[in-house]
Image (cartoon, rainbow, N blue to C red; front, side, top):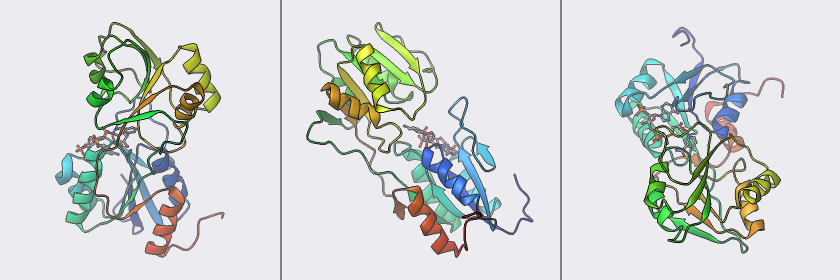
Length: 261
Ligand code: NAP
């Protein structure tokens, strides 16, 4: 951790997303800011961040409030994943308690087009139920945390793609595990789904460009998609992308210009 003698304003970015990393890169250009990224520490080999990084939970609202105070954070940016609702809620509460300004970056959800065959589900359990009773070959991209829901429908043949291996391992009778980290290109997703003879896609409505190619590939292959809806959130001050976040901070903090721009 950097010295408390550092009089620059301290921006804490709660990251774990492309937006968090890109914002850190942009804010690092402002020499009158001190920027820290916080990661949950759940990814085994996280992508390197361009600014000092801390790892692991804070210990709930209390812990985050204490951190904001002791590290003299003046702006808290919530750039976490849209499905990571616990940390977002904690952040808003802790920012209020510590009287710290807060901004949320939330990419908009994906919206079905005329050629899409999407079913929306409110939870992983509901989504697995929506796959139907007949055995299908299902491409699963819902991350690691909710994979246990698949065991309620063991008749399907699952192709499960995650960044790190499921832990604890699943005991599904028909499952293939693929490790990969986005971004993914549409043609690669198309080829992947054809190679594995995929009949349905099970995904979360994360939004953004890095993982949307599977939806375009499903559209081309006429494959039905079951999409888990985002948890409901009361976000407060919110922007949709990194450019808007930088503009907002430049205006609010009276920043002069980005170095080298
Ligand atoms: P979560 O359910 O909202 O958070 C669980 C706990 O993990 C939080 O209460 C907090 O612990 C800690 N935590 C989460 N994000 C943190 C951060 N950036 N820095 C420090 N502590 C953090 O979140 P999750 O769904 O487990 O996601 C964990 C991280 O992975 C998030 O940063 C998120 O952006 C990223 N991610 C999540 C998903 C997803 O689908 N959920 C997908 C891609 C990336 P304390 O209460 O102890 O502070």
